[in-house]
Length: 407
Image (cartoon, rainbow, N blue to C red; front, side, top):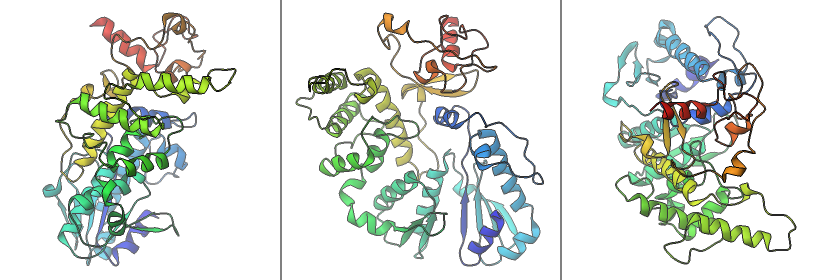
């Protein structure tokens, strides 16, 4: 079925096919783990076996890696398919390897000239779309059902000062087609800071803020189009980056910062008082409030790094930086990155409150998913928990604590 889809496309145009990569120490570790469900399990996939459910495949990283490899190998090794469908138009496949594979007129070559180390398909799609747009006056059609791709196309189309026609459409039949050129012309004032606004207001690697949707973000970005100009500029002072982000998110909460010394903790207190002072008999839920200053700063670091990666999407390599300086901690045992909730030495809550938080996990693999209340609260398990924080406990934060103790 997949090859039939490619056949139809190759009749009329060159096709650039892009897959995600799955690397060790990825900033998307937590997002991928959160997608796992009880029905998720790793398979040993082969070409001849019945394909498991979509949910079963797409919620387990190893399954997606296998499926990508099977598709790529099948196409490259199918001489009949290559002979029949690449005589007039080329097929360029970007899979696990850094160098894409080009197939044209029966010849298979490695395109080392466009080799890239970006991990996410979103960045590579945009990279190759902008590259093609610079090389031809023909219409470029990007087939992707993803907000991130849309925003990156707008940003890099404007940055490159392109003039060609570029469209974006969903692979799902009968959805609307978006004119990238027309959208850029209509919203030029906000596009420079659009990736930053998207990242700071909630993305796979950056938690969103309760009640602050993308409509609110766009409204405030239109009013303050240059407010996030430093986000994603890695040579900027982190103090200045956090200051800009504080003003912007404060505006999204409809609270104007009266001074440059305004902090998120102050904003948190103001909103709590305003909600509690309206005759309510109960205090507002904590998740409805902005984060504390310390937690917000870690969030800004992750958004800062993500925006920098997005802004370098058209380059062959993302910025070479240490993610541990941008809101992450390395877990050597599992080769993953976990987000830092607050810096070391900053308590998550008063000691008496911490003692009240415990989980009741009791399965064969306790505390593995976000169903674990400790995991969900980004806390290590303790002796108060049902798992007793034993060696069987799969809460990754317990391993972090143990590693730090060993150090």
